[in-house]
Length: 319
Image 1: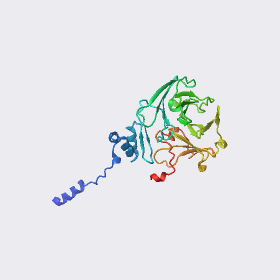
Image 2: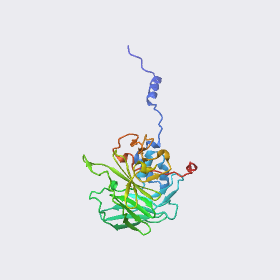
Image 3: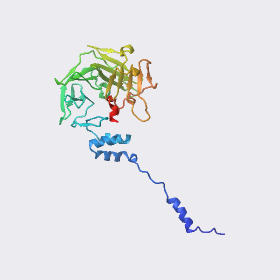
Image 4: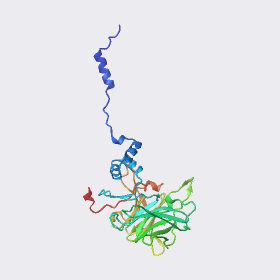
């Protein structure tokens, strides 16, 4: 006996169940990175910065299309534009807040065996001043790698200092001269060598506090080594000599504080990324990293997209 044919109403009900889908909820977060970069490339700088705080993917797209150098206050949202620097630079620093007329920007463009190229600029200027100084870097190895062999820049008493391949150099802003600081050479105690066809990465951080200059060496899981510049030599600082100092280091800047007793005798590294709720630090009091994890690569804790910011005392006024 043949089964009865389905009625039209039954077919309609079945078809309706098949055709009905869940409503779509499109989101800007679903945009591909290529499309985001196209959108960001059409924004002016101020709108680019505003869009970059939406989420991580927007931040990455905003940074990828922005080649300008500028001052930006994350608290007040004030933006100070600067002329485009024609030469790429490895390091850049400024002498004082850009709101002051005396502010000077200093960029270290290139360090070669027999010369150094640098650029300077002031807020409000229309172009950078680029100069090349002939200089013989006697301690510069033939396989010199600028990423690991020199430090960040610090400003002290009209001079921009940089530690290069074991020696301290400075650019005198008023005299516009490049010189060697006559302190004993301090080679990095962590040798830069190849192990199983890979370079062992290390980092050098230069910091300043109230006119005193410090250099910090880090490499692998070894403890950080801290030195302070004396009259004519570097003095290694042990636990008692640190005297409660707290040192914050990152790829772009380093800060030294004396007024943080609950963080005394520590070196803090700027960690960046998802699910990272705390920084990595080394405690000289306990002689260990916190959290206790083997450090294989300094870039894990000092990546290029992180830095330390000292917030203003009235930070709550900006919230």
